[in-house]
Image (cartoon, rainbow, N blue to C red; front, side, top):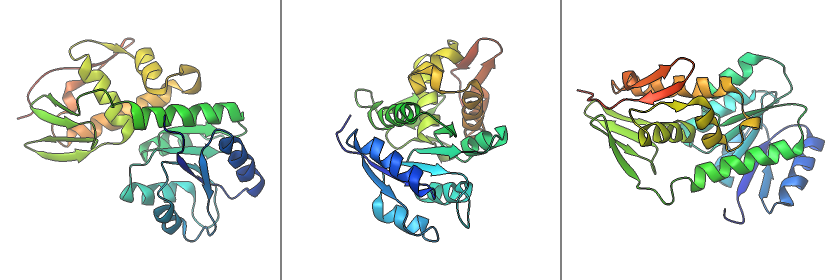
Amino acid sequence: MKSMFKILIIEDDVSLFHEIKERLTQWSYDVYGIQNFNQVIEEFSEIKPDLVVIDIQLPKYDGFHWCRIIRTHSNVPIIFLSSRDHPTDMVMSMQLGADDYIQKPFHFDVLIAKIQATLRRVYNYNVDNIQLKTWCDATIDYEKNSVTNEHGTIELTKNETYILKELIEHKNKIVSREELIQSLWEDERFISDNTLTVNVNRLRKRLDELRLGQYIETKVGQGYIAKEGYSS
């Protein structure tokens, strides 16, 4: 992992922000906060962070709003923080393209582990692998996180690309949920089973735009399988 990543913390609790900043600085991360919560996207664009940690409850607009805006500009990994005990918050964050979700109060070791795992996954997972892959008469570009066939091109999140990559590398074979969780998040203790379901469902929905969703099948009680086929 490179020695310095830029991390943007979108958190209005000043004391919590400073504690997170202090912990992350000890790991040689370059940490930024928001100065004006009316200009979040402007500050995001200026900082160009490698990862964003964002609270759901924020002044004026909530974290979901800013996640939507960020996703129109960038596929930067996003980790949500929430003090609310609403299962729908986690589902909503994943549907918006977040990479992970942490419930407050949390242990700082868990936050750091999630950040480190996300950075390794997003910026290092494809270094030694071929960037282009053909599947179901479509071209998958792992570097650009895109899938292209005669029906068009779609862009995926980093998580969606990685899940698709894992399934394609084992095409026509069942990949268990446990294998996907361990491979994607590196430590299954830090991710919920429901989060994987949300990510796979979102991936399949995006692939439907290219008539490819049918080739990602759920094997109840076993896992998922990417079948080889043709989209035309």
